[in-house]
Amino acid sequence: MSALTLVTLKDDSQALQGTVTTVTMNLKDAHKENPLALFDLVKKCKDARHQFSPPPFGNSKPILTKCGLIDKNGEVPEATKKIILNSVEGSGVFLKLVNPLKPEQVSVIEPKEEKKFQSKL
Image (cartoon, rainbow, N blue to C red; front, side):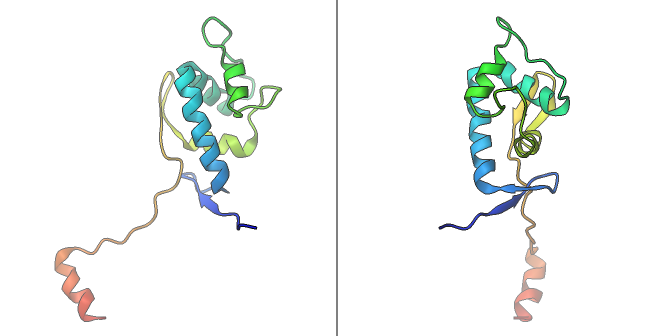
């Protein structure tokens, strides 16, 4: 049995690493199939009353259901919603997919400080 790994999203919430990976891959698939589906999904995450774009303009609901990003009732599961909102930047139809994870804190040692640091070792 493998351990479950929690990761921190950009908004400081946490999610299972496997869920983040799956949702991120599914977002890419949905965006590739129909970019309007991503727009509809983000709108739905921000406003539960949002209605998906009907054919011929969008056909988002079947695409998002097939990708596992919404349930059969057209709702976005809460854990999925957090990942989606951390995975997009931009507004309106000008959305782009980004890494939803919070960047790791990395200490950078400047070259002139490196000698001081090494002398303390």
